[in-house]
Length: 258
Image 1 (spheres, rainbow, N blue to C red):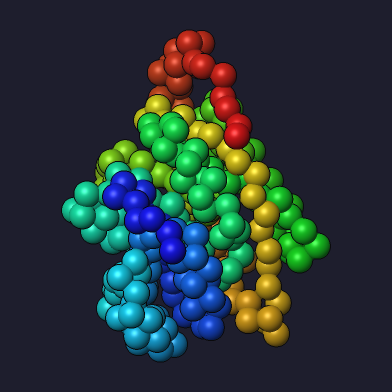
Image 2 (cartoon, one colour):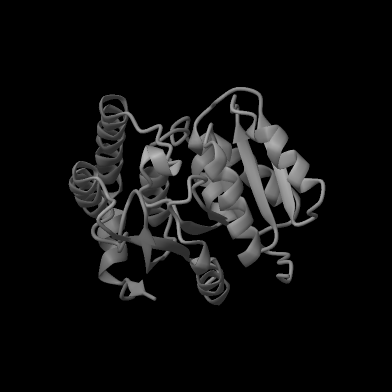
């Protein structure tokens, strides 16, 4: 059994993830307590399945949104509840089994050592990774580097991260954006603008085939248009903040990896 943390919470947003959700939650619970799952308007019976598990596990809590609102909205819902319960940090983890549950303690320890920082997973891809998505994320990473003057975001899209609750909530509630697939890259950039130090840790990522239970809601046209619109907004924000970012860059500490 894991020792419950009173500061660091593992948060898993999920939308129609299917059987992978239950195996992901069980693997996460073997590594950490507490684990909260936000069911984002799912219609695949996962809410009822997890509620039955949570009834026997005090380290697991299930939150539910009545309709699908997007990953960022689900995270924000969990974030507000976490802060109300006294938690100071959340580790976000995808529900589809792609993220490395065995690295949860290491990421949490890195956050506990540097509580003012955000701990960012830097993906290590294997042969299961779709080549088009691996190539496409390089564009988003390059834009995020420019928008932060190379503040040290190792990967803008990888969602296995530990955030300090207060600045993350402030960033999200200051804007109507960051509610869907744009959540991961935009919050990383805006937290850098806010002065939150990024610390990168290499972490493997696995893409499951459909016959392995893999589920993806990524739509190449819709979500790439969303990312393009997001980076357009961020570039404008970057230009407005450029004097401050340059001043900070000249006096910045070297960026870190763990």
